[in-house]
View 1: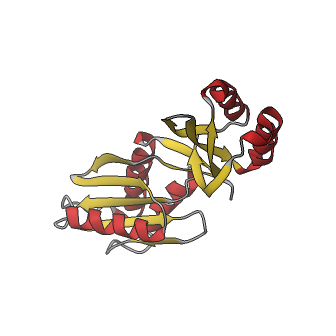
View 2: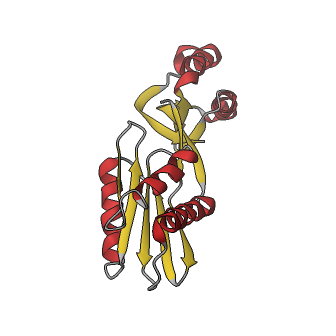
Length: 205
């Protein structure tokens, strides 16, 4: 998976039906353990709630869901399905329910958890993450503008700039564009300017 959608930060939403209140908490996560940590933090925050149901899905295929005491299949799976229907990965969602005294029935619960999760997705900032290579590049001030043009031409981004005797940049480039990036740098600056690969990972642009 070289590209995927996820949540930028966290989002929350509230859904209420027949006096039961559902608090939805949605977060973009770094990995499965981060997702479990988020679930635990929400369960601790709402420790007096009737249920803290959740779903976690990661880009590597790891996933987990829990009904946390609700009838089987009425909470965790609907939450997970909302995440999948929105093509999200590296995402965790916890729905906290405070029971209002009126039973909703299995269909009502599925609907409520689906609507609560969907509301949190609607409130979220969704971002596209792309598998990328991050380079260090140092150029004279006279070559700075040409460097920016090259980065822009390969859909890259400048992560940081340090202005000293020369301009030191940290640049992210989508992996599908790295050959083009290195070729353009070599073609423009010859051997006097060489990008140094720092690491690879996922970046949003």
